[in-house]
Image 1 (cartoon, rainbow, N blue to C red):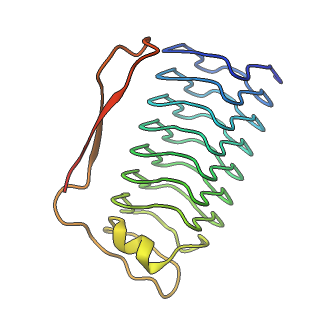
Image 2 (image 1 turned 135 degrees about the vertical axis):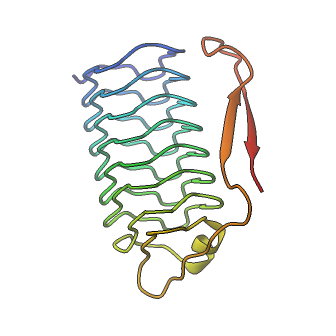
Image 3 (image 1 turned 60 degrees about the horizontal axis):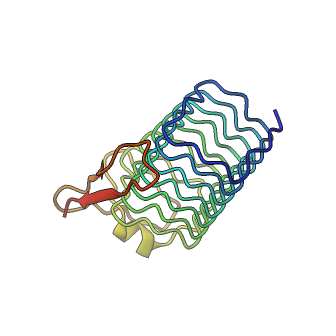
Length: 198
């Protein structure tokens, strides 16, 4: 708890179930690392580089992920209420079945993300980019800052609930985002090939 790991580099590391509550991970590189069920309560993760990191089931309560880059990251079943994702790059991330009550996604890049089954009551989406984000089955009726332009770019579906006055739109074709590693996960020089259905 409270560990100072700011600026550290971890590639494909195993932190499953780790206690990182109140840890300072500011600017750390977490490429492809495993953080399943880890505790990030009140952690400072500002500017973290966490492409393809696995945070399934993690506790991100009040964690600060402002300006982080979590492209293709796994956030399934996380508890991230009151978390700060302001300006975060979440392209192609999986945010299904999570709790994001009162979280901030202001100006975040949510292109191609999957939000199915998650709770966003009180979450702020002001200025967020939602192109091809999957909103099927998502209750966003209690979310803030959403506009019709954002919804028009996203992919709504059965069960999508939106704030009063907004109309759900479906996407043509396959909106799925596929992120392929082109080099091993342990390589500091790894990069990603991104394919998006039309």
